[in-house]
Structure formats: C-alpha cells, structure tokens
Amino acid sequence: MKGFDFDFLKISVTDVVDIVLVALLIYYVYTLIRNTLAVNLLVGMFIITVFYWVVKGLHMELLTTIIEKFMSVGIIALIVIFHPEIRRFLLMIGKNAFLQKNKAWWGYLFGRKEIERNNLTRIKPIIDACKTMKKTRTGALIVFVKFYDEQFFANSCEVVDAKISKRLLESIFQKNSPLHDGAVVISENKIKSASCILPLTDNDQLPSQFGLRHRAGIGVSETTDAVAVIISEETGEISYAKQGRVRMNVSFGELEKLLNKDF
Ligand SMILES: Nc1ncnc2c1ncn2[C@@H]1O[C@H](COP(=O)(O)OP(=O)(O)OP(=O)(O)O)[C@@H](O)[C@H]1O
Image 1 (cartoon, rainbow, N blue to C red):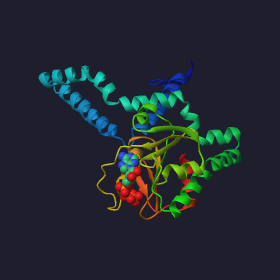
Image 2 (cartoon, protein in one colour):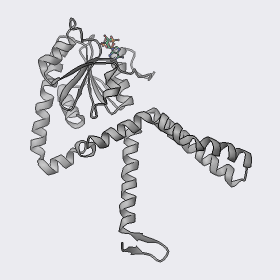
Image 3 (cartoon, rainbow, N blue to C red):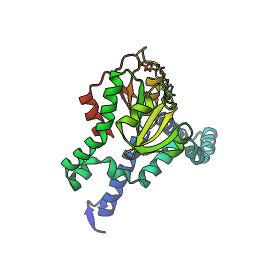
Image 4 (cartoon, rainbow, N blue to C red):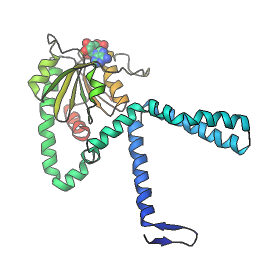
C-alpha cells in the first residue's frame, strides 16, 4: 500500500494502522494492570531487560548466559504471573467491552438523552436503597463490576442473579438476613450475587475508623475494575471506592453522578 516516503523513512497506511493498534493495545493493557501488583512485576521485568542489554553490551558472558536462561522460561512465568490480567483481557474482548465502556460511542449512536434516562432508571433503585440504609444505619457493601468474572466471585458468593430492586437490596443487608454479611455484586444490570467475601486492602494509610467492610470495598477496587459503595453501620456515612482510592461522606447527588459515570 502507498503512503508517505521521506527517502530515509517509508510509512505506509498499513504502518499507521499497525502503530495505532499497538498504541490501543498498550493503552488497554495499561488500564487492566493499573493499580495492581502486575505494574510492579512489569517494572521488575523492564529493569531485568535493561540490565540484560547492558551486560550483553559489555560482553559479560556469564551474566548474559544466566539472564538468557532465566528469560527463556520467562514466557511461561509470564503466563502464570499475569493469569488474572490475561483472563480479564480476554473476557473484556469477549464481552465487547470496548464499546460498552466507551459510553460516548453509545451516546453518539443512540442519543445521549436516551442513555442518561436508561442509566437513571438503573441507578435509582440503588440510590433509594442507599437512602433507606443510611437512615436506618444498615451496614452495606455494594460492588459494581463491569465484567463479571464468574470464577473470581463464584467461590465466595451466593448466586442471586435477580433484577435490581430497592426492596431486594434492603432485605439482603437487613441484620437478620442470612445474606447480610459480605458484599452484593451488581453487574450486567443485575444483582449477580450476595454475601461475597472480597479481598481486603493492606493499605496502611486509611482512616482508623475503617474496618473490614471498608477494607473489602477498597480491596476489590484495587484488584479489579470494580467500584464499591460502602455504607457505614456505625455512622450511616457513604463512601465510594475506585481504583484503590476512597471518597468519604459522599452525598446522594454525588453518588448518582459517580454511578452514572462508572456503572
Ligand atoms: N472480606 C470481606 N468481604 C466482604 N465483606 C466483609 C469482609 N470482611 C468483613 N465484611 C463485612 O464487614 C462487616 C464488618 O464490618 P466492620 O465493622 O469491620 O467494618 P467497618 O469498615 O468498620 O464498617 P462500619 O462502619 O459499618 O462498622 C462484616 O459483618 C461483613 O459484612
């Protein structure tokens, strides 16, 4: 295919498409591993690679051979280490997440008003349930997941798979309910599961009043793409966790905006 030709540099249209695709790939890999341990592993691998180039350049035969041997089994190690990220990446592609995630596309294709109206109908029962639970000081942890990874949640949850409703959310978190302990997971417009045990964050910079419920909400937002709404049983205060960071004392107006954006 013909393209630009600067004597020393020939760029065809295919090259441009190639570069754009690689840039997109890097971007999506970055969004998948951002705020996860995988970032540290990636940095570690980068340092080893640079070190390898240096020792090879200096003709340090012994070190070069050791690192080469280490790297030759590296691909298997990579698959094992990045297994959760690879799973999520494939799930993301499988569920056509690129389009779903980019609401601008849906807005462009189907009209922004329609999207906002649909979002509000989805979110309203959740906000209403939060209002009641705040008033009654009912502790709750609601997690919103874009790509529901059955394997991740299956082992630690009770499957619900029901339509989102205010009364269902309230009854799950009621003190006497057998499902009240743990988190509710909402995904694909459904209450997918309840009573989920989530990974706790080991962030030691969190406010001292944050107990296990808050730590679980922040933990799941660190390790997955989930966002979490946490209602404190002690204070009724609502917190919002995303990418390992937490916003405290969120108003209902803010909550609506945040969920509209992230859910
Ligand atoms: N790993 C976990 N995953 C999900 N939920 C959990 C987990 N560990 C504890 N919880 C929930 O947190 C509740 C205990 O909350 P705790 O009092 O420690 O939290 P807190 O952050 O101080 O919140 P609160 O302000 O409501 O007291 C448990 O009853 C359970 O429902």
